[in-house]
Image (cartoon, rainbow, N blue to C red; front, side, top):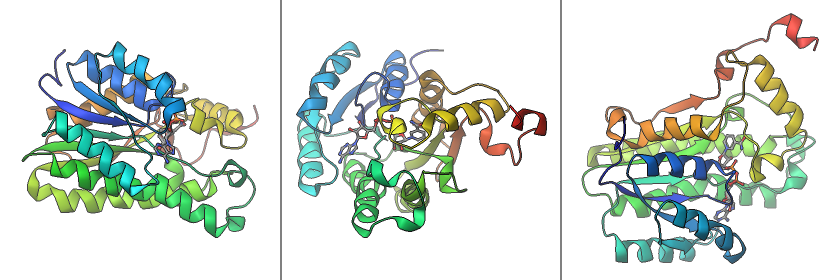
Length: 264
Ligand code: NAD
C-alpha cells in the first residue's frame, strides 16, 4: 500500500538529526507521497536538517524556536507564503533542563517548570493555532508524548507533568477544532535513543527495562513510530480524534512484569 499521503502537504517540527522521531515520521510520510516543510530550532541544527530535508525532496526549511512566539509567527507566515493551505502538522518537540531530569520531582525549580511547560506543552497549542488557520475544512495534527504522563517514572520528573498537560491539550484542541474538520491526536512512543531521550538520567536502564517487560520484548523503531504517525495523519484514521495512541510494544498494558524476568 503506497500513496496514502499523495497530494497532502504539511509541517514537520522537531528534526534534530537522523535519530529524531520526527525524522522517522518524515521518512514514512515521504514514502507515501507527502510534501513537507521542516522547521528547526537554530542554525546549528539547521545545518543537519537541511540535507535531511533534501533527501525527502524538501527545500522548505525554516528556523523556529518555539519558546519565542514571534519566531512561531514568522515561521508559519513564511510557510503560508509558499503553501497557503496545509493538511497536517507534526509536533515532536520537548525540552527540560537536564539537571532536573534526575533526583526528585519535588525539587523542580519554578524557572525550569515554566520553561519545560512552555516548550514541551504550550508550544503545541500555539503552533496548532497557527496551523489550523492554514487547514481548510480538513486536517490532522499530532504531537509526541510518553507514558510517564500517566504513571511516575524515575527521573522523568517535570517532563511527565508537561506530557500530562500536553495530552490534555490534545483533547481540548480536538474539541475546539473538530467542528472545522481538523483532527488532533497524540502518539505515545516507547523509549527511543535520541538526543532528547539521552537527557534523562539512567536512560539506558529504563530502555532495557521496558524492552524486557513489554509484551513484544523489543524496543520500538523509528519505522514503528512513523507507521503509527502515517495512520493518524492519513485518511485511514478519519474517524479518530482526541486520542492518545500508544506505540510502545505494548508496555503501557503491563501492570506488573513477570517475576522471573524482574530477577534479571
Ligand atoms: P530529539 O532530540 O531528536 O528531538 C527533540 C526536538 O525538540 C529537537 O529537534 C529540538 O531541536 C526540539 N526542540 C527543543 N527545544 C526547542 C525549541 N525551543 N524550539 C524548537 N524546537 C525545540 O528527540 P526525540 O526523542 O525525537 O523527541 C521528539 C519528541 O518525542 C519529544 O516531544 C519527546 O519528548 C518525544 N518522545 C521521545 C521519546 C524517546 O524515548 N526518545 C519517547 C516518547 C516521546
